[in-house]
Length: 65
Image (cartoon, rainbow, N blue to C red):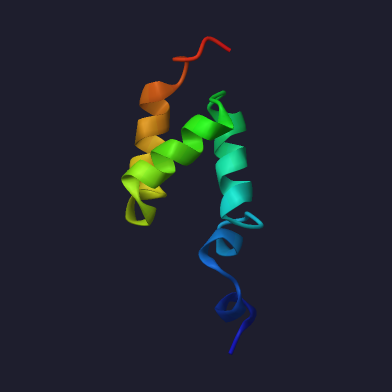
């Protein structure tokens, strides 16, 4: 068993956890963390990489931050 077997999908992609991943997305796309969490919940885990990123790209700038 190698080290990546013990890592979760977030750690394999450079994040500490799902919360860390969503926090980073919130910062990267300049969107409220609550919005990112809600969108994640709406889309589901199966879309957490591609679908979520596409939706965040579409939403970027919506909040006028």
